[in-house]
Image (cartoon, rainbow, N blue to C red; front, side, top):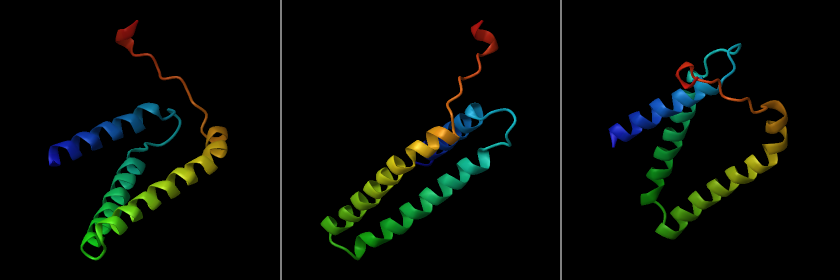
Length: 95
């Protein structure tokens, strides 16, 4: 399981650093911060499994995911305006 987590981290950091504009600072810290927050929240939620019934435990998960999806839908217009998509730079070997 540790190997999969390390593979995910490496892929996520690569995506963050490859997609950032060159004028910005490295976003690797943002990537690691998001992994830390996600792992911490996941651990806290896992600790609730013993205290709630299975149905209530998974309902909490569904509520969190639904709230996150709703938040993304509400923020989508602002994110599209503030974070315009930029084409990926062409690799030197692709020429």
